[in-house]
Length: 188
Image (cartoon, rainbow, N blue to C red; front, top):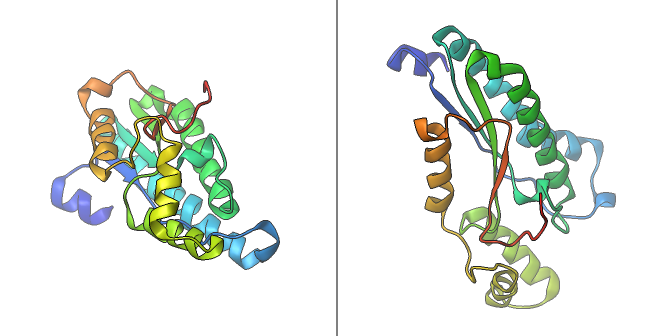
């Protein structure tokens, strides 16, 4: 943060994003595993927000965009560590939106679904090994649940980040927006 402020004189936009903890069932994880997942997914967002907010308040506003996962709306099987820590990020963003709107700091969550990233490849490979099927079969099954019929591209998430960070997103705060090609079917 200090280097960014030194180089650019301000911080207008903060996008938090963290990798995910390993897959596995509840009974597998120790306290240390839980703490590691919370440090990775939730505490990293808290620490970055804590560092950026004073600068944004001083300059009269900014944008906090927190990456979570579609798991905050529908937990993903075998990803309990991620499901729980990312739900904390969604709660953080909503709480910060409530606190910071008066300071012209807008706070939103983005919830990617299956986006063609290394993480999706890693999880699909884990599923393939665990289920004794090919990686292609796992990906085919995932696509079957996506209304648009394909896995998303990272640029499609970046487009939403750009929109929320722009002046066009100036009336949006406290939201949790999924980018998942219609995979989640719930109303909210």
